[in-house]
Image 1: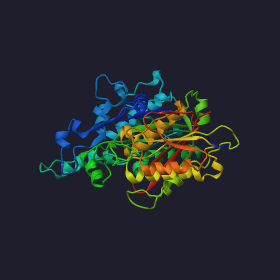
Image 2: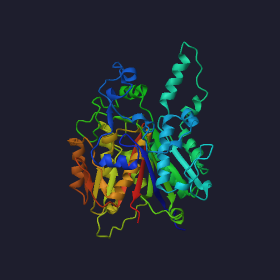
Image 3: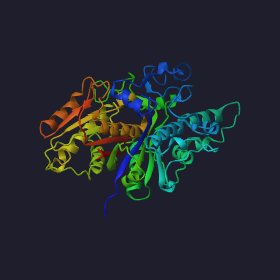
Image 4: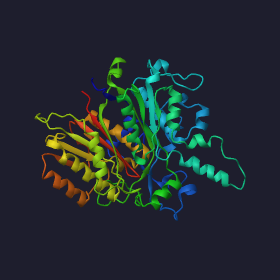
Length: 465
């Protein structure tokens, strides 16, 4: 019996780099930064000027003005949110809905003549069997701002009551539920929260549901809206944030990550289902998904990279390259690397071990491996990072471009040594892409997502043919 193939037919993103996929991708490959010094935030004096908690030198990957309150906004139609939605939805759910709308439009699942909402604020989709259309959307922290607001109200001397909407506002699954309700998705509904691996796990869960015939088509990804003084204080106290406000993965001067926010949404579809409905745009095929646990520490990764290695090995198990072919197999690894000393080094160790230890080098066949991290440009989007970076990975496959790592000026000598030792003793080349994008005909790509608690997720994509 033939295996069900899972392809990606639609993309949507809201990031510090842009209000949609096209704008975000263009800015990424053109060396534009989406990071904003906290001193430039509109509410800096009121909420962020607290030097006893964190320095004013921090930066964030900020979504300005929620990309939607401007009168000339073209990211989504005015009727996407009702007045009730605006009251009842938390910010990360709104981010997710904006990106879902873009992904559904991209996949031609909302046609022009069916775009109008019904009176109840819902959209009709251009698909026959809505019962097999599922949703897998996660978030790392959900709504920290609503939680803090409720605590402040509860403790207020004015004896005000907290909102009756508090519990729905802070539940992690609400983005997935709001999307299912607004677009009428009656298939499997699930929500993952695995810290910074959330986006990768959410996509992987959707992939498994389609492979197991539980669904034919899935909206999947993650959203995050955790830029808040409490979040900055917590991460700064954990010694995770860059005190310089610069994200520079792999660089010898890296000193931590920059907190970001946003959403990334993908439409995953069983191949025959996509072809039968007349889908003409396929970004790539998912050929593997790997998961593992470091079982090491609540915040620090296993310094050997063993957990990351096992996740990538699981993701690439079913990769079937013809080792007798004379054509080199070229890869892109979109690294999770967040600009921390230990994390970046351990991931590079894992990547070199993956390709070096593979039996007969079946994955590479004398090809090139372009490695980079998107976080130099947009910061670390926490739970949404893996989803947005999976989208950029698919764009790399589609266009034959590996984005460079912004702010990577001088590669850490320890990381360079690992790469050089591997390249000198292997029939392939691992390259850390800096200064400008790499133009290369890619065959496969890996998108990594690793989170606090030692959770690892790895997705393997193949160019669709």
